[in-house]
Image (cartoon, rainbow, N blue to C red; front, side, top):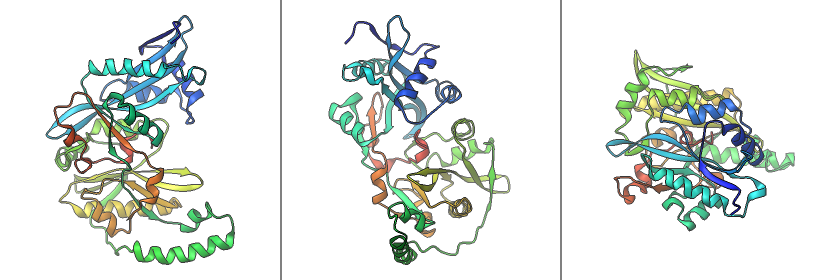
Length: 361
């Protein structure tokens, strides 16, 4: 490696050079407000960053970042992290620089309270990390299960077939099939569901009630949800709650995105008190109506199969779709210092994970 390159921990003031590198390497544009939100304002603590710097120039040419998060693991709450924005300047690739940055990050992580790292990665990165055993990486989900509800089938088919006659024919036959496999009940809403713009103290009470429903999941308290879905400067989310008088029964968080010409309605996160099954039904019903109003083509919800929400999804006409999983991300885990055995951490049935648990939405 070039002797003019220094591998070190992040220092205040590096962010301008990091953002310059990010703009060169990554396709999603961000600004400094996003960077401060992501790396400095996180209620779980500031991000852990390792960089490669050109000596005397102050230019960051490689970067790895771990975003800390609080996670409920078994009966305890511990600190974990997810890896984001790992990058190397195109002119300095193939020189072993990123491996040095990764080693520095491993050194920093060993000194921290982080118990393990989980990553929504891509197939190439997952294959490389698993082969190299990067930070002890192990596969958790080859693909996290995805539940879909098509809304405007013609728009989806039109992205694959430019011929209008073929689009019409496939839509006609597809609608008939979908009516059979996505038939939903005529559900009557039982609770008060409304949109909110703020996360109030009742979300802390709700978290205490739902925290025992799954063995491993991010802490979804007021501080986290406010930071993740209200304060994020580069995205807009719609939050609906179900309530009974003053009691909060659950919430659902939605976002519209466009991908390859298809308007996708993502269910980013959802949580309800398990005994209040009607609250789950009400919130899903509201989400469907919301996305129909937004002229969405399809609704997607990534969710493990062993959760209490799956039955409610089925009743509302959602189907498990393995084909759509091809475009979704493998999820890996790198145990660092967890008191729990790997067999516990690597059991998908112990996890509650949604798309919102990543930085991808």
